[in-house]
Image (tube, rainbow, N blue to C red):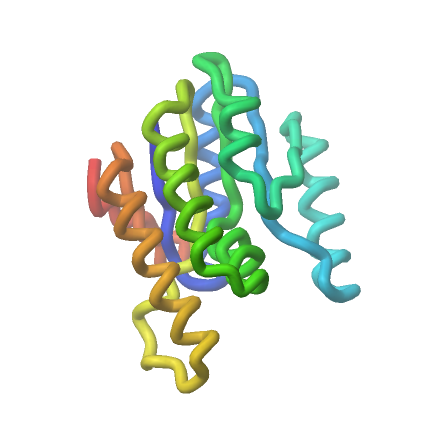
Length: 171
């Protein structure tokens, strides 16, 4: 089962995706993609790690190698939460290697189609605003939109979250 939760910042998508994993009644694996680039982000990551430990999650830091982590941990007994794809995308776009990004993205999509178990992906919907002025931010919005479309095409369920409310787009 592959699910995609999309929404804006602080929309409630992560909370709802986490609940979905908890409801799956399997071993919980949290694949975290964030990197601590500044003290505020480091504190945020630490807070989330402590919260998940209390809720019986196994956290795996995977800021770049999501395909490897999914292949390693996916099984019929696991429910995997990936949070968040847009941070993962940012990590790869910062490398400024378009060819490598396309390879990584292709491997990731293939992994999603073959992995056993329950996988829930969380990502920020960034394409509903104005077209960004800078080339890097335009590239990010374009790549995020393409990634979301590719995942939505193969996902069993796609949910858009606004103000903590789910709108199921595909089921």
